[in-house]
Image 1: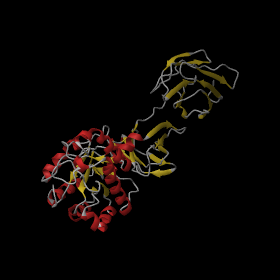
Image 2: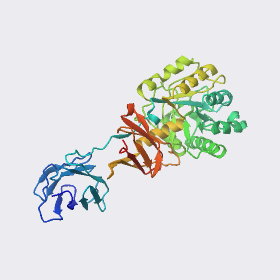
Image 3: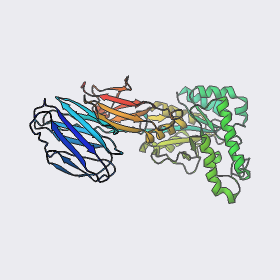
Image 4: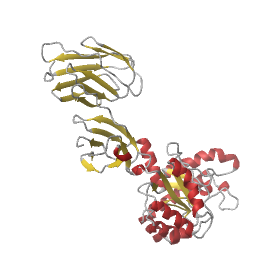
Length: 454
């Protein structure tokens, strides 16, 4: 069979024990030869199907509903590969070959691409594509958060952050004077890129020394305290990207002792209804593994009160060494209560600004990236020209989860270009040019990486 002859394959595809039959029909009278090198490889699921070829070659059972690579050879030695995505029901597949051009149609079934290689060439493999743990494939992530909404946040912490080009998250109690009488200053803080977040109206706490006592709160009172604070922030500052929350005193419950077990569930419910994530406080201190994080109880690094710069930096070392997320929880800065000195905080922020390999982000953005990274759906395929096509699916609410993600594609970066939904996007070499990084934004549907220019 010469390479100019039309080759048509019709496949009736069935799952769950049914056979898959492939009939090979030439456009000329001679009988085509299909070598017994046909391969099926599955990544997920189980089908227990088998393949029968018109030339009498029967392939052993294949396992899986997931992505399959079907390879067959012509007498000239070329190899064609069809990558067929998950099937949910039987359907027909039509593949036609003329010269080097291959067309694929698969009604009711998603199919990525069919490629024809040069004689003797191996079937092109799919490159590994992952979402980098942190934007730009940075080493680790750090967030600077501040509780209570107090004067030193506006007078000291905010200006220091601005000096070093960083942003933090300020969890405010909306009954405090600093919130009620200095609203313009909070608006300026937000305009500088800082996150204004919810810490309840009255800061109810289980500690005997702090009033009001959350032991005295009913479920209706706690729900109202969370709701009213959220509404106040939304009305005065805006919360188009959603709100985050910090538990007062780090307490995860309220009410009388006998009710506190079931009130924990209510507390989480009230928080989740008005927030997309929440931070705890001071419970031993630990860096967060983004793959194992509890989004409604993100732990901080521990108590920061009175710590020097070197002590503050030491708190972050587990996160920096292991590529994790370290969340600082501050109260006063240079004054107020539970404070660190202004100099210690200034040194810490200066250090973070000098180390761009550390992603310093607001608490909300840290959560956004982590959750988007977990949720992103990707389908990787080869185009007829040999380019890499990555289909993207964004299941989260893009009004809240709007942060770009960094994809790492393991192909040589030299000469590679990228287009997202038809528009050129920047690529960055990684690992000495052995891979490339591309940022994709929520809502993008298709990313195409062209490596043929090399």
